[in-house]
Image 1 (cartoon, one colour):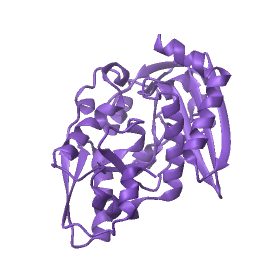
Image 2 (cartoon, rainbow, N blue to C red):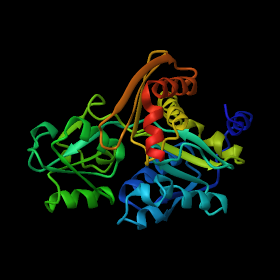
Image 3 (cartoon, rainbow, N blue to C red):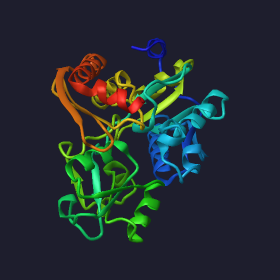
Image 4 (cartoon, one colour):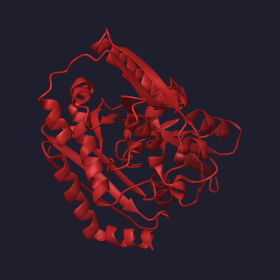
Length: 321
């Protein structure tokens, strides 16, 4: 248990009088913020909960790949600045966008129940990846997805795809791509499940660490808030995400690294699957491990160690050179 959570354990949740949620202004981020807002209001009816919409650097720069401009942390940093200077009390994030190590002074107070963690194939012409003719253009912004696509479908052309969900769908509809890969969770949350052509099972496209889960971040010195947000925590999801993030931390994971990690809670156990790959998919190291759910960080660290021993260390060294 982190020092912040230990402190929170000694504080009885006191319904706050007013809360401000920092959120990106994309449609999906605002859906997520409003979802948490509704849950907080249900828990604390006397509390005024408002949303501070912000446009982050990651949202403003759309003509460059994320790995060229600083990674997914660009979606989080400015929200944390709002927490630090008191403009907001909490921030709501997609856990797959949260850097694997939080800056000093911040705590992840809760991780809510996961939506569908899988990737989705979206196309207006083809029923699945297997149906795409050779040379078809598939859009994705993720090195993780790209490496798996290139390994399984070397005959396809993979092109970058940035922007919010609606922007990506419009590019597909305008004919720039034969198909695109998006997170199923985002499409479902936005009421766009009917756009999903096919759900990709983990065996075909292993998700990113934290994909489908929402995190609630606040300052680590706010033990009162950490205690108040505890009711939003979904323990099975939190255990899975902690295992995935521990593995990614051990491998220095970021959006610059083609890495997937997906844990499932099975009884008293966690099953964790992961891979590290070259971006071109020419080499992929995969493994999985199950262990007692009470120590998810140990599970993540051990599976990372096994991946490194099986060849991931060489892949990482080549990516860093």
